[in-house]
Amino acid sequence: MGKLLSLLARDDSNCCSPQKYDVFLDFENAQPTEGEQETFEQVQTVLRNSECILEEIQCYKGAGKEIREAISSPTDEFQQRAWQAVIPLVSKLKRFYEFSTELENVVPRILFQLCSGPMTPTQHLETQQALVKQFAEILEFVLKFDEHKMKTPAIQNDFSYYRRTMMRRRLSAHDEGLSAEDVMATREVTNELANRMSLFYAHATPMLKVLSEATTRFVAENSEIPIENTTETLSTMAKVCLRMLESPNLIAQFQREETQLFVLRVMVGLVILYDHVHPHGAFVRASNVDVKGCVKLLKEQPAVRSEGLLNALRYTTKHLNEEATPKNIKNLLAA
Image (cartoon, rainbow, N blue to C red):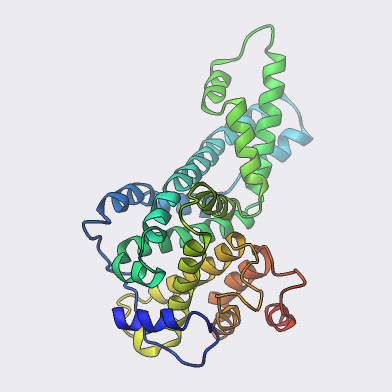
């Protein structure tokens, strides 16, 4: 494994080399070493709730019907019905936002372990596979959450209605005082928290924004770690994912059918994150990310697997539409 990763490291200057190396990261069974254990447990405490968060946003129905009724028939009955429908939904939205802040706190910890010290990116990948697996799980969560969020306009509609109604109820109760129900709602979501949540949900891809900003802040606040350590870790990991997916022999080592799609998502997440963090992005000719290879691989997949990920590259990257992006990459993604 070490020799194979060393070969990959020497190939870093030529991401489009026709040579292929069989490199395998154990995304299914990697266990933390003693040196990884503390960070692993901190990250795992957060990741333990990720599936629940994804299930909740995937099943998010919204209060559109009740809100429309309250707007078209502004009687006390319809107003109260809409308010009672929105309150539990806002509790969910608060949980989603709070989870994003937990991710924001653990991302620098895992990046510090994967990017600091004398080891090369490939040595980190070789010796810290449990943390690499966790970072991959964070990337997959971010892509999944944002995909569901973009498909759920009810989230912003519900929260906007909540804020308008909360303000109106406060004003109307200025002399009489808030009801017990309104006091509880105010305690759960203060004005300050509501402002932060509003900014969070205003973004099409809020979790990606949190992840990219946390990574950028990590680079800025750890000046002793060259930015190249972080960007090369992302690009090397993306190459490993691409080459694993290009090799039938390596795919055959997956124990679970869904692992192939997991690695595909992680590869796309790494390209997107690299594009947000690297000063020149992922698409310039000098980039260490093989964007062309990634896109071609995606287009070989069934549309049900690839279309959402291709759209993520089209619409959530930062530098794709800049002049420095080669036309062949733009055309490949536009097709």
